Structure formats: structure tokens, C-alpha cells
Image (cartoon, rainbow, N blue to C red; front, side, top):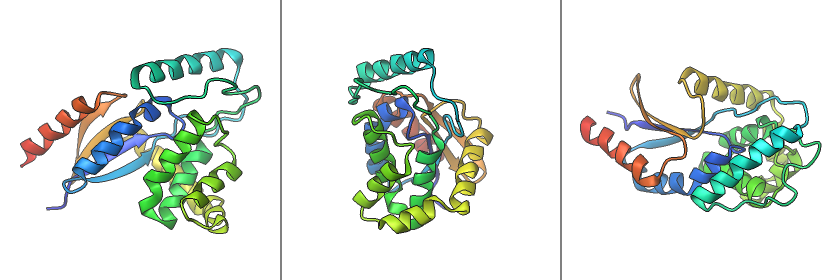
Length: 209
């Protein structure tokens, strides 16, 4: 029997996913021999075209402070989300999808690099130049990445990721679902403590043994 798949539904520009980043790294290491762990780009705010309003900025920064307070993950609050910023999460998601077509082992590293660059460094990861710099930092040629990033195939596959999240009933990120065959088993929704998520996975694996 094939190993179950642990689907990780997340968005690189989701602050609670950034808060959960250390936990997913531990889980990937601990369960890699028992579960196939795969990332689904959930689509937090794909296709947004209008700049953020001051009230939206205040609301999001409130969430960022909550994530920082609960998880200790670093944020650069000074100058964050400047006037005119368009919070479109599609390009960052598409960058990760494009990387999956170039070198699948770099999907999670690029996802994490985008998160760190956006939250801890305050850089605009909606911009292709920033995303390309992160890809080259992982050893991928700029032209190779840009060709994949700008391709119709990457755009279509990114939309397929978003659809998969909707069809799985995901309404918020991060979320974890185990799939065995056609059966889906919810593990966790939200930025839960590592111990809580680990216990839920263990219960499933023990019951399925």
C-alpha cells in the first residue's frame, strides 16, 4: 500500500502559515519515512488588483502582531505594507509552483524563503525580481526560473492548486489533511501547537496500522 499523503495547505503570504513554519519543518523531518508530505498553494488573496486601504492594513498588522506574540516568528513591522501595496498572493504562489516544475526538492525551501523575505525582511514578494533573486539563491538559473514563472503552464497549475484547496473544503490556512486512497482525513486547521498536530497525525497512523 502506498504511504498516505499529508497535504499542507498554505500560502506564502499568510501570516499564520509563517507562524506555523517551524512546526511544518519539524513534521516534514519526523514523518518523511511514513508520509508523503506535499504542499498545496491555497490562494489567500490571488488576483487582487487594488492597493490596500488603511483599515485593511491595520487589520492585517493586528494579525501579524498576534502571530509574532504567539509564535515568536520574526516580523519587520516598520514600513510594512506601504502605501500603494497590492496584496496579490498569486505571484508568490506561482513562484513556488514554477519551482516544483524545475526542482521539486526546492519547493519547501523556496516557500520558506518567500515567507522570510516578506515577513522578516519586509520585501515585496509580489515582484518577479524579488522572487527570481530567491530562486537564484537556491541555485536555480534566473532565466530558467523566469521562463517557468511566466509560463501559461505555471499559471494554470497555480489555479489548479487554488481549486484543490477549495474542493478540499479549506477555508483558512494553514491546514493539514491526510489522504489515503480516496479518503481524506482532517488533521488540523489553523496555527496549532506542534504537539497538538503531532498527536493528531499519530492517532491517524496508529488507527490505520
